[in-house]
Length: 237
Image (cartoon, rainbow, N blue to C red; front, top):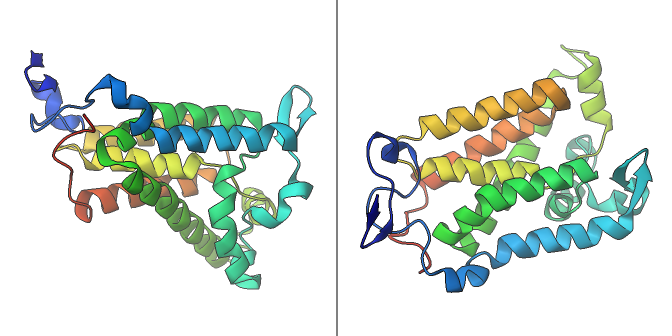
């Protein structure tokens, strides 16, 4: 499984895993790793630095003080009430995770998937996919909710989605995960695994409109990386 070009997965599984077609290494020189993941780590550091002083203890789970960050977080009604403000919040909201559970979840997703994507595709592409998929998910999810709520579907969880705020980096992380799948010769295994994971999380924890954002971001990241961005021939090393 080890070749002169680096660690490369072979066999039947190789076609389902990103960047394992033998054209380059998944990870190059480990000495350059801090530089190769500068954006992913920088995003996480800034997110934590913003969250800690802006959060409060809510029965063992820390939540961000929404009154202090209200101008910078996304609300679906703003799409029709204040469109340009809504667009502006899509730049700031990804850095403002709404509670400690989401922040830890985003940290894990970024380290597991976002950092690998940045290593292989570069910081510029990682930033493009992260914010681009966030933007697409927010607009898509917001427009859909405008079309179905309160008519023809007046459901309580849709009412909650309409009234609540939206922030954090989970949608952007799902966009990067879609990008990972887009670099596999056979992407359906990864896409299926990510989709099933989201369904599992939705069932055991979320049970909200959040899944619409995540699936939209996953789709956007996959489509852009798969069909619009040419692959780099090798990693950073």
